[in-house]
Amino acid sequence: MSTQAAAPSSLPPVASKPKKQPYPFYLGGVAATIAASITHPLDLTKVRLQASGDKGMVDSIKKTVRTAGVRGLFDGISGTWMRQMSYSLCRFWAYDESKRILGATPQSPAWVLATAGVMAGSIAGVVGNPGEVVMVRLQGDFAKPPEKRFNYKHCFDALFRMVREEGPSSLLRGVGPNVFRSILMNSSQLASYDFFKAELLKTKYFDDNIGCHFTASFAAGTVATTVCSPADVLKSRIMNASGPGSSSTIGVIRSSLATEGPMFMFKGWLPAWSRLQPTTILIFLTLEQLKQLVDWKRGSL
Image (tube, rainbow, N blue to C red):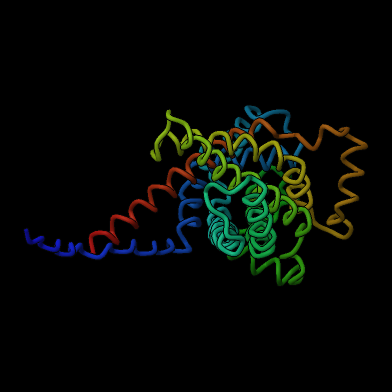
């Protein structure tokens, strides 16, 4: 009885999954600009509470509306846009690059993600400092007596006048606490969002959708507000000051401790949380949607 050899099966070669292209570097800056524009009135109130003697969040908002009208709640928004398209654009790009250098994945330990955040914050804090100073001054101007106001017309007027009247070094005013705050912000906000998102996806209750993104960003916003509050207060007070000796971090700490006690470091926590929480949620929800838009566009080509 003859046996017929089985013909070798000719299976098609398994196609290797193409490597996913990185997202455009500017997506984080665009998402942050959209979010900051929506929450600008709360950010304005936070800065004015930290830099002035206003008693509370509601009182500060009422004072702004009473003196400048509803439009006053959007004072200095051009500075906000300058800040987001310099600082936030840089921090999201640097965070992704730092994760690539460290070989971090969504399943990486929290300390690896936090390290990437520290690296990103160190770079973005310096790059975004001029925009930060401009934003703080534009937002805090109307909270001052008329004779002490800068009266900048917009962000570029502020930038040019600072260089002309105070010298280029004015663009680095408060760079120390700003870089420190940037490190705290990125190691807490960006890293904790990635961490919480990965942990939520490990459960059976969440998929990679808007519900997961919202929950992870809510947790990240609370963590970031608490971690960043002391540096945020110092940054606002130093940047909003002018004159010799007013840029000393130690001097500001001593003066504030003497007049207000150690809790001055958490002054404005509630408006900071009220501003950062929706901002954090809006940033990451917008960013995730922009990423989906990029994926859809690439898939339709």
